Amino acid sequence: MNAPAERPAAPAPRAEAAGGDLEGEVRTLLFRPLDIDTWQEHVIYMHPDCAVCRAEGFSAQTRVRVQIGDNTLIATLTLLGAPLLAAGEASLSLSASRILKARAGDVVRVSHAPALESVRALRAKIYGSHLDSVQLDSIIDDVSAGRYADVHIAAFLTACANERMTLRETVDLTRAMVKFGQRLHWDRDVVADKHCVGGLPGNRTTPVVVAIAAAAGLLVPKTSSRAITSPAGTADVMEALTCVTLDAAQMRRVVEHAGAALVWGGALSLSPADDVLIRVERALDIDSDAQMVASILSKKIAAGSTHVLIDVPVGKTAKIREESKLAHLHATMTKVAEAFGLNLRIVPTDGSQPVGRGVGPALEALDVLAVLQCQAEAPAALRERSLLLAGELLEFCGVVPAGQGRLQAGRLLDNGAAWARFQAICEAQGGLRMPGQAVFRRDLVATRSGVVAAIDNRHVSRAAKLAGAPRRQVAGLELHVRVGDAVDAGAPLCTLHAQASGELDYAFSYALAHVPFVIE
Image 1 (cartoon, rainbow, N blue to C red):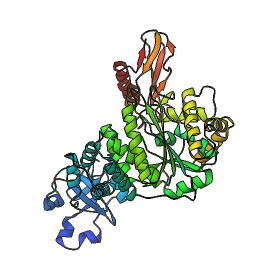
Image 2 (image 1 turned 30 degrees about the vertical axis):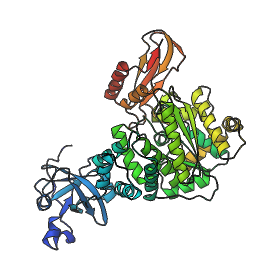
Image 3 (image 1 turned 135 degrees about the vertical axis):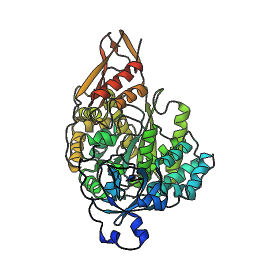
Image 4 (image 1 turned 90 degrees about the vertical axis):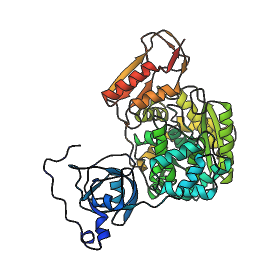
């Protein structure tokens, strides 16, 4: 970030800032854009010697209330001196600038953020107390409104992880996340949805299942999250093919036109606290069990779904690794769904190895297209798993009798009806486009001949993430073998895809040190 050689004069403050009492003057600064990207964390930058810091006693990392015109938010203070800022100026991170609609020369008012009463409940949870609905409401209200710093959110997520939430708390957490968001309603008795708990690379069945279900006549207003701990979420994959950032009115038009949508839930404010929690979960690389249940079901309830199918991969290196964990998740999710009158069907699936060939947004999008277009080279495991889940959903929603779902799903895929419906969905969302390709690629080869005995899902995911996925859409990993395949020494096991040579080297070094493939 280079300062200009000659600093332009700061615009004159508006009349409202120049006049008025002394206190009003002390608390105003002029906005200077610096284009600092802190992702979704809101930060304000002020000079350490400015009158506002002296008058208010602000120091670095103070949480402050920032106002420009009628727009306000809570931000974290970072002190930044000359030559980037003068004492009478303030700047904002790009996310904060967008929300406040800041322009150069705008008057910025800064004051102390309101005291967070909910921190007492947060502290109680950290020490092992059980929270009631009022306490959880207060925490989620503050999270939704952006009053919590990332450190508070991280503390809440950690305090709730590893089965530290009771069933009652999980129900109340789900209810709070629905309460402080928008809700959609559909004039249908059956509104279908399908979700996967994640943890399995290349398990991109959702776009295929949604296309088949919509082709069968079901209404499927599918909202998806971006990746939390994986190299790609459904929203990341769909963004490689079409626009996924739609508001509620736009999504409704898509569903009315095509019978389904595949959009990013974060743009809809269906469960705004969840999107904030996910951002911090991604940085921590954790997925709290109670938070996962509340996250999934709150968004299904808010989206107006009546029948939800949950795919739960189970395997030694999947997110759910033991039958006891599966039983706990099944019981918790079922009871929480019952509390809201939501029809739920949980389908345990094989989580022993990745599903498709691609791992990463663009690579997984190519797999989805191959399956929908019934290409000969389409990943067989992805096709079969998609048909299994689509068949279960058709039976669950009463489209076909029990035992007939897989057959009907196969017909709709093979006769082109699902592909036609998928194209209609993408066109309604802004048009279908082909995924891009990475600039840099490198093969990881077998060091010995033999048979692939196992593939570690965690190492595959980690290598794909280090290559740049999902932040770089075209980055990731392409698998060339599956468990049971015979390989010769020197044969490629997978190909790393990256958009930067440094990321390719980083991912390749990790893959060499943590080879995902066991060859016997």
